[in-house]
Length: 88
Image 1 (cartoon, rainbow, N blue to C red):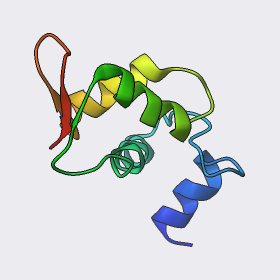
Image 2 (image 1 turned 180 degrees about the vertical axis):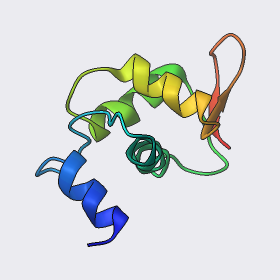
Image 3 (image 1 turned 90 degrees about the horizontal axis):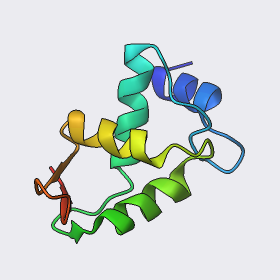
Image 4 (image 1 turned 30 degrees about the horizontal axis):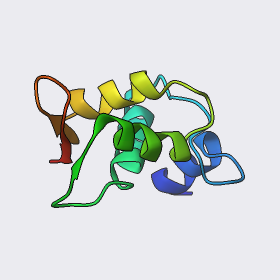
């Protein structure tokens, strides 16, 4: 089984949503990439739009943490005031 299949088996629910945020770095990175793939290039998002995308992609109700992880990992960038987000 390759790493992608292992990640999917361990961390995605039957609906293909992230069911928990991994503690191991290699799985955390996979989770962040999984979420980042839900965003479109060359598009700006409001914070509520980012929350909506994230909300549809996970089932454990911690949108704020996931949004912060996406920004920290430089998958998403944002204006300092949080008014605009975009895929890096």
